[in-house]
Image (cartoon, rainbow over all chains, first blue to last red; front, side):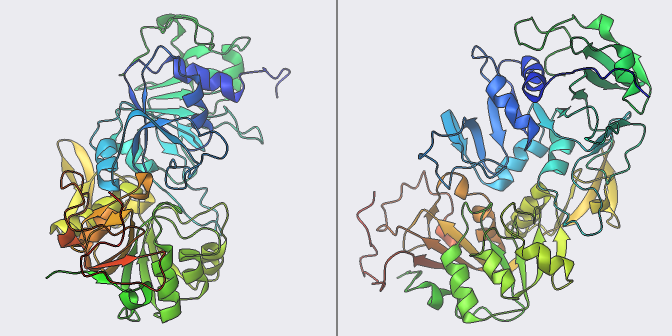
Length: 239
Length: 236
């Protein structure tokens, strides 16, 4: 169906795109997997406080080899460090931060995002899969801005941005913005709106790989490259 | 005189019966009360309902309890682990039931049980399969689902340090569910690698006040000696 496959961004470039839009001073929860890369891409002149729902605010980078502490881990159960100014707390406090609307942004992975902001990211519904949800449903119901970071299509080339999710939902109408290898897309009352395209990618490329109508809202956002050097647009920041 | 210290893990878990509902602290391996679980496996209680975040990793602790066929039902948020198939095998074989609960709802159900609140409304999971069949109610234009408090007969938790009154402090992210579970079980058993003399824990820094803890077991010394002064270490 397509004559040309746009190159798009790699994982780290998408992460830089998200990191660029996280404002100084934000309290942020990064989901397990792809979004974890964002932590390494936040500019040094920004103070962004990372929350990990197992009980740490002020998560630092992974420790050097040999200095891992089995009792200092992140939600993905990987060894981390506590940054200066960090705090530890129990799960009820951790989810009060989440559910109580104290976190500014969370960035999650996705199986599918629908044009109305529905998110499916916890279960494929496969008969023999063990269902596991973790904190995803709490995050999408409580964090002020819910961003998704994902490849635009599945490995099989199926669009992940759809009219209606087929997989079991994590939340209804919860996603604010999607960062993919091809574009930054906002969920609006009118549906999916393209805010930005990756270098070398056209609106037609994105439309061809999206199973829902797309609006073009690029005029409201300054063109920028996801290398973090350009100034954030007026659309960036905490909604 | 209050002295909640037990000589060893076996003594501390001796009276846990078949069919008990058990809370087990830990997020992955961080905060997992492995020695208490090992003692429970040896003790033999079965048909257990286990409330915990994960369903065991590797082959020890909770994974070993499940593998031994002692768990009839798990109530947890994330029963998947990269390094353990123990739960998955039993689940697929229909030998273990699962109640899947969003992580924050699990924490709050435990917290409310300990706080004497029988149920609460939350927006978490509304519109998903995990809210199906539960009463809903709208507050300030926000649809919420009714969730019930979740208590237990026994909580097994891991602390970093304790005193003979059961005051506890924890280590980093090993804290996770333990302070909540301590409040929500009829009997709370805390294992610790350090027992300090009464008055050695800074009251400002105590995370779990001793009123929530029934038994304290020092791990890592054998045989255990119960020092009448209440101090088994020079720590602090």
